[in-house]
Amino acid sequence: MALGGGFWLTQNKVLPGTYHNFISKPRAFVNLSDRGYAALPIILDWGVDDAVMTVTKEDFQKDSLKLFGYDYTHAKLKGIRDLFKGALTVFFYKLNLGGSFAENEFAKAKHKGIRGNDIRIVIQSNVDDPVKFDVYTYLENQLVDEQAAADDAKALKNNLYIDFKEDATLAVTAGAPLTGGANGATALTAGGPHQAALDELEGYGFNTIGCLSNDPLIKSLYVEYTKRIRDEVGGKFQLVGHKLGKMDHEGIIDIQNDAVGVGEEVFGAVYWATGVQAGVAVNKSNTNKTYDGEHTLSMAETKTQTQTTLLLNSGKYVFHRVGDDINVLEDVNTFTSFTVDKNEDFSMNQVIRVLDQLAIDTAHLFNTRYLGEVPNDDDGRISLWKDIGAHRTEMQRIRAIQNYNKDELKVGQGESKKAVLVTEIVIPTVTMSQLYVTTEVA
Image (cartoon, rainbow, N blue to C red; front, side, top):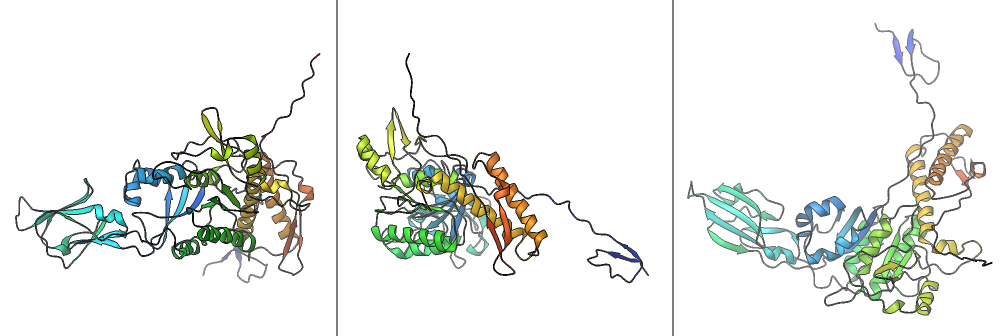
């Protein structure tokens, strides 16, 4: 019979033997969450239907044809290219209310949308065995799949663009196009697909969400969604929209410049701003950042200092011309109703990023390491105090906050036995944007 052994909690073992616990030496846990996550409900000609499609910057560059139905350089992907100027990962939701699949007698498109109408199937007799067929799938003039020597449709394998119909009868054809694909006639104006998109995205974590609409009702939907998630649910992200109206909220960024030109979406700047606002580091600002997007932006709103000052005082996010460049004037949100408890600091997006980072990271720390695991006693609270303090020290090291005093961090018993109360003082650091100089000339 073996001797006793294993882990022990109390010294109550019966069998002789060695009981050995291995434990880590206590050390503070520091984990700053990544930025660069954006969400975008968008009208697409191709792509995953009725679900969130997660796309990284690398995915987009390598697999844009598979994901969006167009080559990376295609004009229809201009907005998405602008988005990835700053974003690293984007949660897309295709708006396709009333959309339909393209199909023909041989196959059906993988996704709804008009891009499916550009797919055609070429079937030829196999050279070595004329009874069998070689089947080619083309997207416009690009060969995207080929399968040799199939004797019937059941032998064909579905590819990235179509699903073959098993009951089809194969026959030689120079090119059988798929037809009937549609994006959805009401996708631009109906609230239905936008509401579906927001419902699905509520389960995801992101830094910004873009509103690609000029419809007041849809813009209002996004505004109220943002306020509810930030203020009631605790989600920490900012909405980026275009001419949203009279707003007054730190979670809302309202671009004033129109995108101009033939065929341009007037809200075109939203793509770029959604990306760069998501991707900017917690210790950085987009103030004076040069616009490098592909849309042409109107400067009509910012021709004079008077116009620009009025917009800035109203909490508007504007671009202005600096020499040959177009730059972000000030990295601000729409919050303007300053009070003693909530001053003008909350109008600076860099401050909001710092506070959101603190909230996200502290919640992650507690939910993954303490919730339901660590006793709410002095030792447990001291451990939490060390972890929160270590996180703030790291935030100070990267100059996101300043003059942090761990002695002012209090972690104590809450009103119930299971509650913990944390109080602290945090001073966010912001970048320089104004210089006042007095020069005395002797």
